[in-house]
Image (cartoon, rainbow, N blue to C red; front, side):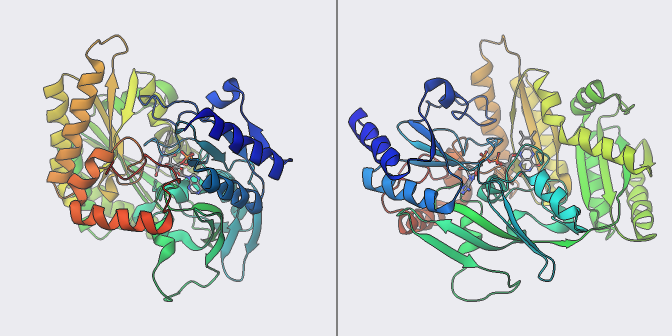
Length: 464
Ligand SMILES: Cc1cc2nc3c(=O)[nH]c(=O)nc-3n(C[C@H](O)[C@H](O)[C@H](O)COP(=O)(O)OP(=O)(O)OC[C@H]3O[C@@H](n4cnc5c(N)ncnc54)[C@H](O)[C@@H]3O)c2cc1C
């Protein structure tokens, strides 16, 4: 885009929306260039707009369409696939000032919210009313509802409560032409026409901008009881996952940490974990009454049967909270070891032991440390490729390891991304996983929603 188009576009914004907060200073723009994908090097955006109302978003997109300027919707910037990174000459629309919870509707068990509310803040607000918003990404304190909708975020309790998409009953969106459209509402069942809500959730801002969401709530579950099981090998931990699932236990959380992760987390949080174990499972149950204890007894037996060296139950809720918090911060513990690239493979649960073996093989072949943790109960593993900052071949090794991990997951009938999204960082694997016919359908959907191709270009779909 030439500079005169950019200047005319900014002038049109200033004229049409004189009260809008619009950043154009290079120093201000720097904070909106990246997300948490430290290995990507995007350019700064042309400008950043911080609207507070849907009408402002609609006008911004209408002007962007008129001037053919790309638009990047952005939440809190905690994404791990480059979905919110800036596009050259583009307008980044940050939703962080659209941060009001509009209504908590007890009789219909829904909350209506603007997208800039942080996940943890929404959880806290509904908890004050005795209600529970289930989607629980480990980044809860640093990610927004808009970003969760954009990525179809998963997290620690999808095994029992599903992913973000399962919690959405209504959306207000701004289309690529700047029109405001309402989809769904407060009804829990709705079979009218094509399901546009599930299509938009997880589309990473490439189909529409989400300006309001109606989200499903539940009564608050009882406090969790937590079991930790330590294993002498990664594969025995993988076998235990299959055994726990097969035993019919429905944990609310089933997380894995490998040895590198256990040690890094223990260094940061001093939890007294078994630092010699090759792997640890953290299993939680929030069943009422004696149900949780009974469920964890069954899980305990399944872990010991699969070869666990030791198990321990945390009955004190404060202790359980500490463990969960440490797991949430595992990525930051990894970052202290070097430059960390978190991958996000998912495989059928029965193939978890095979995927763990593949990760070990790839680490050995590439001469790299790969620290793995993740939502193993969903078959979702986060192998973190740790790069020595001084390794001159680091980048090449990283690319080889990423490629091998993605191909291994696809080979096991899985996915290259279970919850972080294709974004800008995994586009070359979309067709490999989905096939050309499916990608052609996706392109047709994209064209129907965004004929000018202005919404988050260079994300999700590979170049044609
Ligand atoms: C330590 C750590 C732990 C994490 N743990 C998890 C986890 O357990 N589970 C998980 O799923 N993810 C996890 N993530 C990744 C990240 O937090 C999630 O992807 C989250 O949903 C991103 O939210 P955000 O507000 O930061 O969005 P951003 O990164 O700003 O944006 C994410 C995507 O959503 C789009 N988007 C944002 N707002 C809108 C909108 N209003 N309308 C349309 N599109 C929009 C953006 O264009 C982008 O494509 C983790 C990240 C970190 C750093």
